[in-house]
Image 1 (cartoon, rainbow, N blue to C red):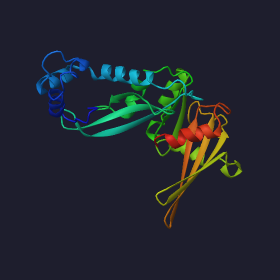
Image 2 (cartoon, rainbow, N blue to C red):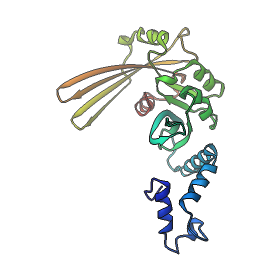
Image 3 (tube, rainbow, N blue to C red):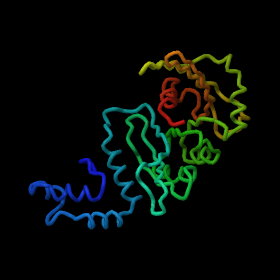
Image 4 (cartoon, one colour):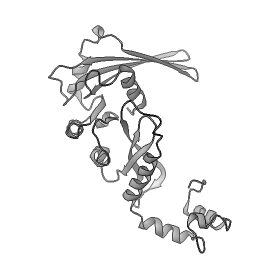
Amino acid sequence: MLAGQRTQAAIAEWAADLPDWARPRLGITRTPPACATIRRVLLLLDPDLLDAVLHAWLAARNDPAVPATFRAVALDGKTCRGARTRDGTQVHLFSMVEHTAGIPLGQVETTGTSEIACFRTLLDRLDLTGLVVTADALHTQTGHAHYLHRHHGHYLFIVKGNQPTTYRQLAALPWKQVPIQHTSTEKAHGRRETRTLQIVELRPGIAFPHAHQALRIVRHRTHHDRTSKEVLYAVTSLRFGQLTPTAIATLIWDSPR
């Protein structure tokens, strides 16, 4: 796969074309494996175990010389093009990626279940103490918030229509009286986007568990002569001062929505 071969037949052909000196380095001491052998071995593999081993290897290769100011992971789901299950449905994977270095830390297949059901399965692999978890609005679930709180982790969740009461409460906060704590601007391909972040401490009574701060994100986009505005709201279990507004903004910009 690393050499660009995308099918079992192509992998077998690549192995057969290996020079004699390269075969022992890949563990081939006799005849290179045929396509049927490769298929049989792949079917015998435990995908969850292989996934855990590979992601542990990737995490171990993270450069310790670049310390992170905080630990954070982003959770997101993707449908794999060209990959299908035995019943013909497309393969959908739910994965987590370390924010700072972009290193994948694990993934699970969601076939037959939903991403929501896989949330705990994926995060059970990590020590959640002090970890900040970001995810799209689908995972803004009270059960997820309780789970992270029990394991001494934190969340930063976008709030949309699946939490209507919380959304109305956030939108009703006196944002005109809250100063902008962070601003960033990006330009690319004729498009300009300016983003602002406001943060306010929450009083008891918000309809989402363990939330300590509310966030309002405003995006102004200009593409050629067209201008648009988007307003997003979010909640986090982080308390005031645990992360700077710049660090929080980085988490939001890099997280799925």
